[in-house]
Length: 495
Image (cartoon, rainbow, N blue to C red):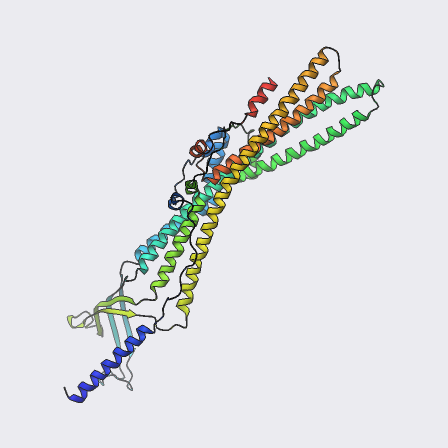
């Protein structure tokens, strides 16, 4: 090789190497872009508890109402919201399969018989110039990316996180629907009991009205008490109508939650739930949050956002593909599959982003912002979860104290009713004071029924706040302050 040619080649190699170094040093970089938010750590168990399997899945059975059990079972089978959540979970499974497929090579069989006229005024040999020939190609084309920077691995882990997220959302939907239905059933029970008590009040007022009318007719009463009683009875009748309307609306809601038409709610029997003994814990363990599906959803959302950002970050590095083909290629059909028409090609294809006007950095910045938003949402979910647990425990404590005081009111009203009954039996007073005392006793019973309903609703919300594991969580959560069972007291009173 001549000296000038050697010098030229060396100069060319030097320029190429220098250009390559400049390209690598000037290429697009992710420097300075990183997430800023830090996840809260209320407890190791709370952070690691991201399993989505439902625990204590049939927690509503602790209330012992067979009809409620059937309705919740139907809701978890037929509610459209769960069908949507299940479809999302199935879609996430398919995304995992797609992420797995990215690891494998792409192989395609291509057959390309193309008729072509070769121009005279081009770099075509004279024997072909101006002629029409068939250009034929039969080959297996293949390509595959070498995952040096973990892009496909991050995509797979992100798909797994999305799958876990969808499964957690499904469990969250189950818990929300079951809790909503049980709470609605409890409200229907409250309305039913209040209707019965108001009906009893109305009957007592009717007796009082009869006596007052007789006394007014005999000239012993001016008619003021009679008018007041009639007004009170009208108010009670209006309250009955309101209770009936609200009960009907509640039945419609329960039917829809159970995946049925609203009109089916009229066929439901009266709720028949047993009391669940409740007491208060001395402390709230942080691992209770591990049973909350919404915490699992938020945790997997952080993981999915992190892996999504990792996929984008891998795009800053060289992309290495192995591409090639093997097959036959010839002009004319007669020699298409001859041994002399064999052809193949294989080699690496390396690409590196050098300049893209900031598009890749902007995309990566968006992905890191998504991580920050997911972490912030996770932190908020943790705080909200802790608040809900503490709030519900506080409400249970307040309701327990209120029930104690209301029980005293009820006991004293019964005592007054009994004492006035004894005075009536001795002929000291007439029956009107006894009926008035009965009305006051019924008012106390209504207050007790409302407190019992409030305790039931708070108990259900506490079960939901601890992830639905009611059957297992309540004995652990609520060991100490027993609450009077109002229904037992009612039965004794009416026996």
